[in-house]
Image (cartoon, rainbow, N blue to C red; front, side, top):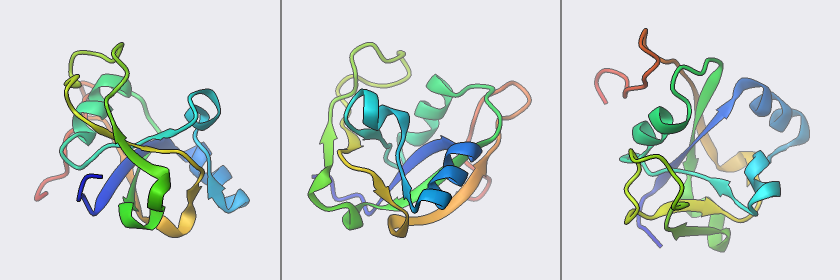
Length: 123
């Protein structure tokens, strides 16, 4: 396992509100692929730009990786991913629902005028 203390997940405001009602977060990929996709801090902006360019109403969840235990695995990405994601990189995948207690912060993920995403100033 990677020693990254924090991992990140991009979701919609609607999905996060549903998680709050249910007490646990389940991404659609948990049902279709068996896991929830995450990214390390150094990967999150490439992922945001590869998959969510120009999308509004997104949130970035910061998650305590250690709180996820053995259900968290670092694995290669899907080979069909866009070129912005390096095939040799390992990505965090959570093979269970995400307990809300592991979510440390939730912040809006707002695209710039051209639809791209970048880290906030000062980070």
